[in-house]
Each structure stands twice: as C-alpha cells, then as structure tokens.
Image (tube, rainbow, N blue to C red):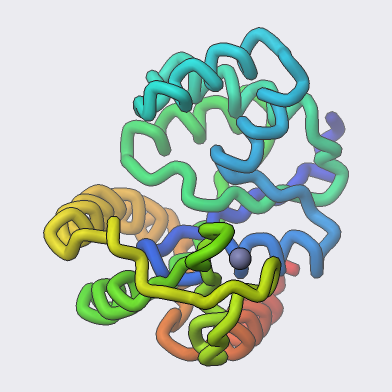
Length: 224
Ligand SMILES: [Zn+2]
C-alpha cells in the first residue's frame, strides 16, 4: 500500500432504529467503497468455510458475543480481503471504546489513517417509539425496514403477507438494550470529537433526507 492513495475509513454509528444499515449501504454504493458490518461479513466468511468463518458460526449459533481475539481476526481478514483502493464504510463497529482502541491499532498497522465517525443522532424516546412499532411479516417473518414502515406499507414486499407488530420486542428489553448502547457509544463519540473526526447527522428525518444531510456534510468537509 503506498502513501499517496491511503483508503479512507468511515464508521456509521447510531442507535437501533436509526437506519444506520440503510445509510451505510447507500453511502458505500454511492461512493463505490466497500461495506462492512460484523453480521454481513461474518455471514460471508461463514459460507466460505474458512477457519475464522467456522469459529464465528459457532458463536453465532450459541447466540454469544464474539470474543476480542475473534473480532480482531475478522477485521484483519476483512482488510486483507477487501479491495481498499478507495475506502470502506464500517457500520455499527466499533461500538465500545475498547473495540475502538483495537480497531485503530489494526488500521495503523495497515497504514490506514484514523477513521471518521458519522453519528446518526436520534433522541432515546424516538428510538423506543421506532422500535416499538417495528413490524414483521406474519407469513415469512421478514422484518419490515424502517423505510417501509415510514411509507405505511401494509403487506410484505417479499411474499405479500400481512405485516404485524413484533411481539418479541419486549419494551423492558428494548429499554435495556438502548440504554446500554448510549452508555457505551458516548465514549467512542467523545474520542472522535476530541480528534475532530466526528460528523454528527440529524437522524430524525426520513431516510432520503438523512442521506442528503450526510452527503452535504461530507462534501462540505471535503471528505468525499
Ligand atoms: Zn412475507
């Protein structure tokens, strides 16, 4: 890797229901960059039957969190595996300050500069509201995207089945999960603010509006 064409790294962070997956996929497609989320990439390597893939599949089946060494191996593999001639958009990772220290270390070893964090800012109360209204297809169980929900779709885009409210999203569990996210992400956000690599985007409007706010901001900062 030469010094002139270092790949850029963006991290898109936001609470559950902030539309971060949609925005990360959209941004990476629009820029022709690579896209990484832990779930997406591990599914990819699980189907390739690699050693790391097999191991991550074991944790996945048990519903357990990946240990740090496995996360490290996955990130290293992704950086080797992906074409990094332009850049890469990480979604939902790193979400704790410890993961971030590890992440920046790996990037440095790969001669990649510190990332920029794009944070989709949404108040807690709105997250609860969005998650509580999350729907699922009654026939094929396909989850309804935030966008479909915003468009008041009544039938499944895959099979045409009726959309119903997910019953497994217990309000107490949702509150705990969301509170944990805010507690941990605060430290990551503060770090990126202190090194002037934090880009806060208002995540409350609809998906299209959030995309354009994000694009305008990145263009203004001459990052894309
Ligand atoms: Zn369906």
